[in-house]
Image 1 (tube, rainbow, N blue to C red):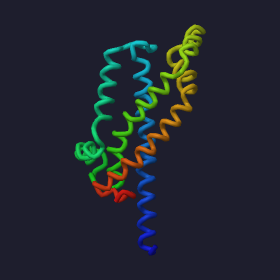
Image 2 (cartoon, rainbow, N blue to C red):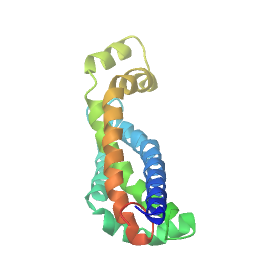
Image 3 (tube, helix red, strand yellow):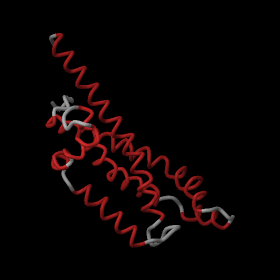
Length: 174
C-alpha cells in the first residue's frame, strides 16, 4: 500500500476511535442514570411512579426506533447549535451519543433488573435507603452485565459511525 493510503487509513481509524469513545462515554453518562430511573420508578421499583416510568420508557423506545441515518439528519440543527457545525467528526459525536444513550439505557435496565430482589430486600430490612440500595447493591451486582452491555454499545457505535461519513466525519466508513 502507498504511504498516502496508509495515512488516510490511520487518520480514519483515529477519527473512528475518537467518535466511538466519546459517544460511548456520553452513552454511559446519560444511559446509566436513565436506566436507574426506569428501574426505580417501575411499578415494582423502590420508588414506584408508573406514569413517569411509562413516559420515560416511551421516549427511550421512540428514539431507539429511529434509524440512525434519519436521526443524523434530524439532529443537524441541534448539532449545529451544540457544536457550531453540522459537519465533521466532532459534529458526528452528537447524534451518535443521542442514539447510544437510549440503547445503553435499555441494556443497563435489563442488567439492573436481574439483580436478586432478596439482596435489595435485605438492605431495605437493615435500614438501607433507596440511594444505598442503588449504590451498594444494584450497581455493583449488575456490573458484569453493564460492562458487557457497554461493549455491545461500543460495537454498535462502530457500525453507526460508518454512516457518519454521510456528514463528512471522515471515519472508516468514508
